Image (cartoon, rainbow, N blue to C red; front, side, top):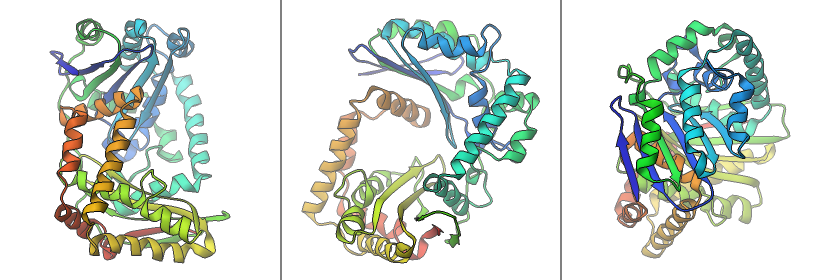
Length: 405
């Protein structure tokens, strides 16, 4: 059972009380790299690093030790649309964790010396990322897909803009985006809701709600492209994909089912059975669907020997075409439903995954679907709905293709 509350400044709290010796808590902010201005590229991720570097009452060491001294873990991440601070700890330490969240989020001092050191750390992270083509290709693909829009830019930023970022730029971004009305605290753990709500009230209620966000620039242009880039790597990499549905579209459930059938986590996905098992052409092949607030993308990725890129691409496009030309039969649909329902159920047993998923859902929709509601959505998917989605998303002529040779 989920319980929720809203503070007077608009900050939202969602809690799922479960028995257990570990608790999971996160603070999610509806602000990420796509909310940056062009001269701020990389600043959201930079701030995520800097909030651990000092507050008005703590130095970096004390921040890092606050949870680890009691066996807990503290971490954070940045995406294109949100930033999250999260921790795992024993339930007795909820107060410790939430007080720390409040301190690093609202009382960080961003020491100049730490800023310069962290720039070097992030530059090393960027260089390391560039050395990993299997990860880099996804960001390069989104740059092709959303070319000309803020959402296209890499979350890590680039060396040129990163070097120019200063404390004034950080303050402006925070003042523009880090408002309690755009935040959610999500919790999964063994603590009474009333007690948790009092802790949250104590450490977060005094901060002003802030002003509404200025709005995001929605990508409205899409032109399928094909691009090959020469890379000095042994293996070739390829992403094939199309724009897809945003968070608000009811077709999301049908697309998620099709993507799972096409190249999901199961070894029996169509792409894995065809490209890897039948033809032995690729070790890693997968499909994914990423929805955003006003757009989304659906893609297939594979890595293979360079001489097999064209053949693998041809086979992948054939599978996409098969999905929108050959509707699923009753038995195929029954199996696809059972598989994704099983995956959702198993994932729900992971406390951290559940906490983060709940927080994201509450941040976006202001509600959480129970497992029963999720099952009902999947079981309500009709063959006609799947066929319509497949025709729209998997049309071969609509696919953008990026290849690293």
